[in-house]
Length: 413
Image (cartoon, rainbow, N blue to C red; front, side, top):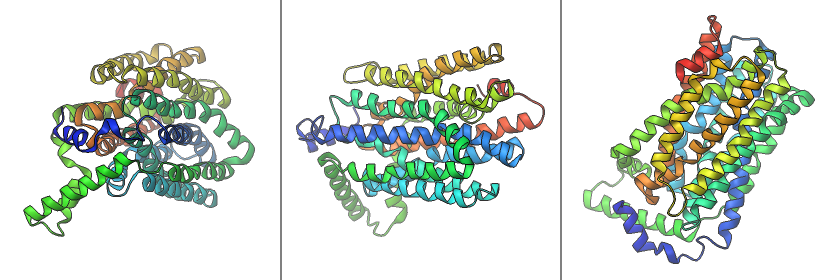
């Protein structure tokens, strides 16, 4: 077992903390689930917004896809910075900062909706960074409030993103139909501001406070013994826990998530537009995201329950899910020509993709321990973000040069 985890368990009496698995912990679980729903709507609606941007500005696929790619990938790329903020302050502050950035980004997009370059900054960068800061705290805070019932709590919280995906397509398409692109940005900004309220609810637990005090004492002692006063590099390394990068199993799983997120980001941004090009209506195309969301909820709940206390090995389950999704993606051209085939793909893909998304926190807990979980989640999300950045522009380039979505899916799958 991780040496640091042994220190935490003995020093903090993890089994005897009064707010573990009871009381305010259940409020935290519900708040984190709602945060996941809102984040899921904002993230998985990017494909519908991508179609609206294409029709509004009629720019090439590669450049328009770059906006959605930056927006979705920043959720992951900002992971280490969110972890640093959590380690330096707490989950509450990080969630509030992310909610404010999301609100500013979406509301600013309302005012600059006439210019695609400005939307790249407001929606792609500012809102994308906010999305990254609100994505990490809900999963990290579960580790501080739950122990024996952590699997159940993770299943509920992870299902939130699936519910958000279920709602995202029809909701954002309805907003676009009713209020246009600029009005949709404004409503989504109001929705995103709820993260600020959720941040206020997720107060630090006794375990998190003890963890912070222990880290501060250890940091001060290390700086005294090494005579490293005011050494920014030392402080940065210890806030981010960069020693986790030497864990080979953790880095191998992170590399696997890098490869997985290339086709996943393509699907997220281009799947709805592919259905439109195949002859489906925009409403039916948006439904495909809903179908992914429906099956994703089941996948997240089943995965969370199966890897709970004394459950299945998360590492083996993770690689099994990856193999199934890889095979499904490679065979996509065989049945992608009809809406029925796309629906089957969406349902099966969502089931296993939901499971993979749920695995990040348990993998970090298993491989590097609860004391490093915030840094582990942030680091793994950052590596995922590298794959997210690469995928959509590559697919857009293939389309602009006479290729098809099926070509890009097979190439990256």
